Image 1 (cartoon, rainbow, N blue to C red):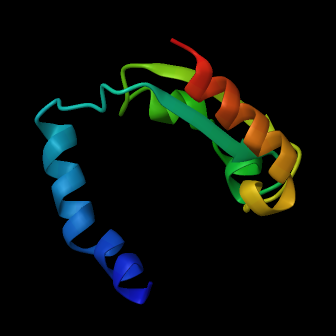
Image 2: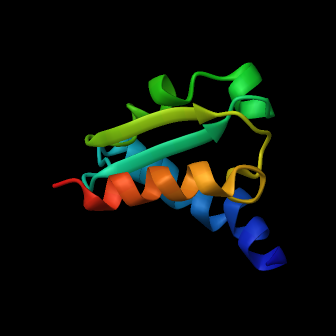
Length: 88
C-alpha cells in the first residue's frame, strides 16, 4: 500500500503529466462519486476537474458522507455502481 502512495507522487505523477500534456484523456465510461462532507466535496469542483481528464463521464454525484464513500454510505454507493454498470 505504501508503494502505491509513493508512486502517486513520483512515477504516476510523471506519467499522468505526460499523458495530459499530450492531450490523452480517459475514454472509457467513467463514474465519478465523492463525499459531499469530505475535503473534495468542500474544497473542489470534482466534475469540472475530471472533465479535463475524461471524455465520457456518465455519472457525477456527491454522496452524503466524508472521504470513504464505500464505507460510509455503502448502500448508496452500491446503488450508484449498479446503475452505472447496468447502463448501456
